[in-house]
Length: 148
Image (cartoon, rainbow, N blue to C red; front, top):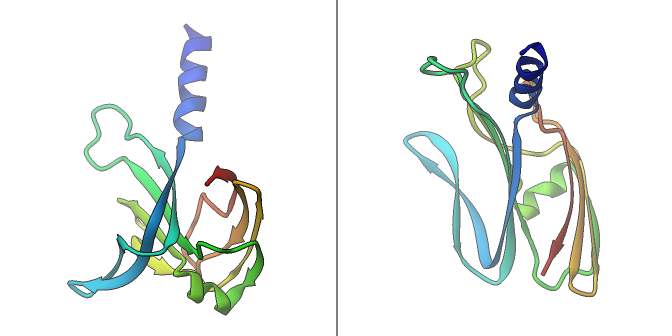
């Protein structure tokens, strides 16, 4: 029983990660009701969405936690190294959603980080480290290989 409970605790702490890759799209940051949000529209590029989520503990109303990372990649990219303020050209947005006492929920632009992209045949390799102001984060790095 103790092993089972320890295993469940580890799973709940680790959370769940997923990524979504969309072709022929564009990412448009917009303002709705005074808050920033990402809009994925038809376009010529690729949009990557990375999500980290923790489920709420049983019998709690607002115990869930989720972080989202959105960015757009030009369709014909071969290789790139993008840093800090230049990340704006890739419409990089970070979202944090929780009932957190420190505030800091919603979407935020990312202008502090290093994004490395390399295309080899039909695979796009992504290596991204970033920080969003003073917002506490669980996602600070994304490494992925995506088949185009």
